[in-house]
Length: 97
Figure 1: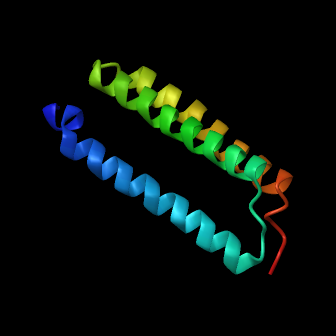
Figure 2 (figure 1 turned 120 degrees about the vertical axis):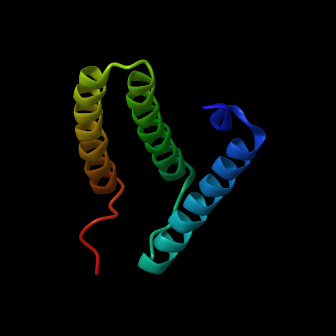
């Protein structure tokens, strides 16, 4: 578990976050969606929410609480998926060809 507190892990996390943001920008550009500041903030908030749901589930697993991890992972996973569809709908990013 020492790897997750090392500088190499956080360096890779930063690279992955940059790739995700570049991917969102490219995806929006291909679909003709103008990403304003509030759309970026909504997308960023969802990314933080999804990351925290993974962190909570992993923390429960690390503490040896398998049942709690399964339940919390299911609840927060459902919330992440539902919120993703709501945000995509709210931002007008669905239904375009």
